Image (cartoon, rainbow, N blue to C red; front, side, top):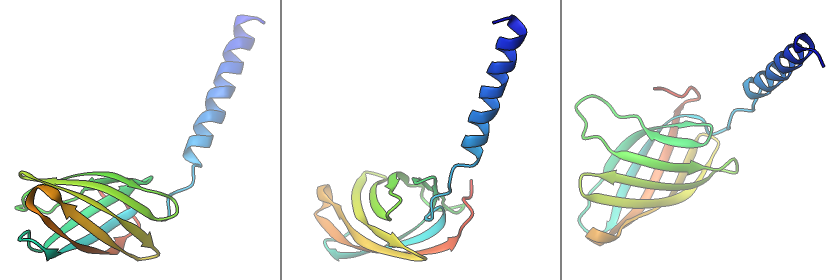
Amino acid sequence: MTFTKMTAAALSLGMVCTSAALAAPKNAHDGTWQVQMVTESGICGTNSYAITVEQGNVRYHGTPGETPAQISGQIATNGSVSLDIRRSSAQAQASGSLAGQSGSGVWKVASYGCSGRWNAQKRSSVAQG
């Protein structure tokens, strides 16, 4: 194979791979969500978070002046939620599910002896930075 043919083949392969990546299906749960965590046991109180889901990955999407949280985890394509939430010295584990425009589940902060439930409402189908 000549250099020109190899270059053309490599460019063609690159274009096919790029097109496939751009055409990757969007996760139905992608977008911005408002999540409220309500304490049912312990002294943790009620907290509200804005999160962004992009291709199933979760990140904190706070507002100015709010104490930031570190949120990591995944939303599976079937809506299953598995999150780790850290704010100051507290670390919460949350699980549950999303369906359509809402979701719910449970959470626990073992170090503080707190637990409760969470509810989420989808605000936008567009992921924000």
